[in-house]
Image 1 (cartoon, rainbow, N blue to C red):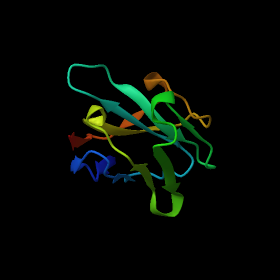
Image 2 (image 1 turned 90 degrees about the vertical axis):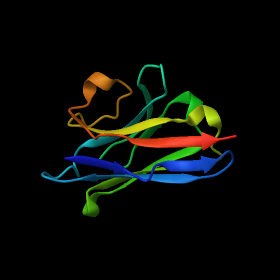
Image 3 (image 1 turned 30 degrees about the vertical axis):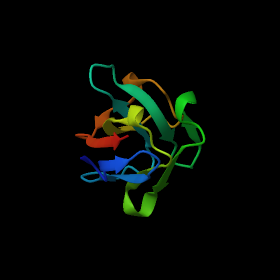
Length: 121
């Protein structure tokens, strides 16, 4: 029900915009989140946005990533700028029926399949 896309190979310093398209139900009232999992590491929180547009970010990505959403399109986005090789990971989108954005994976009910972002040096 959540389809993440937009990943790919990018050079260091480049940008990517990830999309998360929801289907099967309306997610306009859900909090949408992005997580990432680098090779050999735990899945970690990246950013989340409430239905009303309140956003939160992991400290490591503040100023470099921007989360947004278009409720009419049932889609959330993650704009990533100034990418570095350490940002290489599979990026997952998720949805939570809790109205307040959360950094906790346990708060998210629905998960997409992930999209791979590879940043070359």
